[in-house]
Length: 212
Image (cartoon, rainbow, N blue to C red):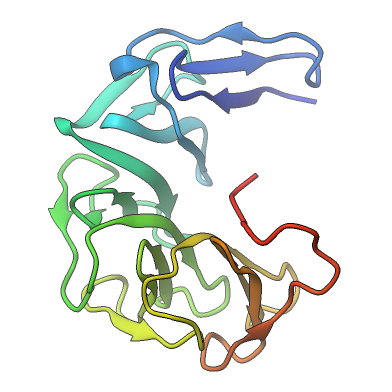
């Protein structure tokens, strides 16, 4: 089965070795015990990136120890992703500073917000077939970049601009199909790479959408 990891927003990272039956805390080197998002390094199975309140962090030994890569007590980080073809390229989204980008596996970070109309980024997602194309779900809708996050443009969803996009997911076999979970609205889907969108909430009994 291998190792399973779970992040919490107060008790750090937990690890499981038996398919989910029993969990134990990983090493406690995470500020305020906050681990809102975890992502595997697809080239190094023992390397995991994470983020939460005040920091971006990484383990290179399967959770035995954690290293803080970016530290700011006044900031909160919601999402982190690794580029699927360039493992050195890592992106993080924060509630105050928009998108941060590292080109050297987290060694250094820079702001990557040109064109964004909000500094509150909830979620990031990369098109699996056109890996230069990145989407950012924000507190004020959706933006996209076609140059690995150097510049962003707003993506019209056909909704009020202030509606937050909480989660994003690409179809596993149809890379031009992307789903967006939207607070107070439900789910919208694009089948042409994010150009046009339509409602996909039929049958849902709730309208809020959050990452699972």
